[in-house]
Image (tube, rainbow, N blue to C red; front, side):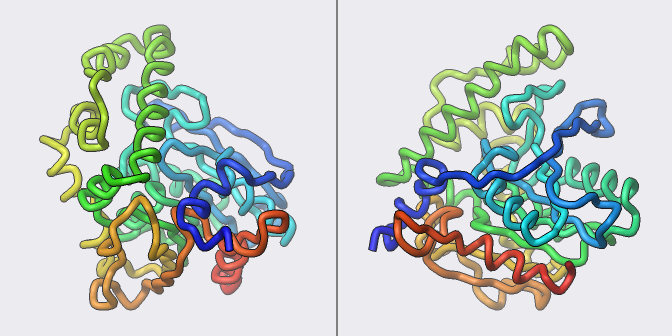
Length: 316
């Protein structure tokens, strides 16, 4: 079967999926440091429900990513309110700071969840996070999370950053690596003229970066992430921000979905039972990177969009 191949699983959604339609409203919000982010609301008004699903995209993704649109569409059909968060600079909308985000950055999550709770204090907030967004979420939950977050879901998280960086330098995985790095660097090039207009001091931080000669994620992290976020080097960044050593600290009921054949990660990324807290439920199956497509090419089914609402049903 075509979906038995991990690369087909990984590429199917971004390259071949016909996205469902979903009525959404775009809204601009502010971070506490003066920067901004964008939210895409879907489903019923948050004022009419008891829970809100908060969808958090992956590296170089946005609220337009196919897995975000797909989940919001299904939730809307089920009468569930959701909001997709665009990270700083995501979705082709430059932010007003040189910094964007990384795998262990949680301050923005504190801002977003605090702002949502302040606006809708009776709502349960149910985050669903993919890939790098999931890394940020697991780091956030290991720090205590938020009282309004009673449960969470993560999908295909690069739990061991050093191991995943090395895996992306092997075989066909280099194709994914090259594409992601190209998108990330292009994002900084697009953001530079915007910052030169609105925040010249922030533009100088990007002008000081060497965006040439970046081939691997270690190059990218050493050359861009570390200078912007204050890490000594990529090794310190990987050791500090890998979520795997922190999983035992998570007290929020969390469904962690990992793929045994994820081409972004070595098999050792999947944690052992003794590396998990009692609050974390780990499900491992084949599915590539954020794939998990079933059925036939002319009638595909997206397992994540059944499993995630099923898990969250107890809080919805």
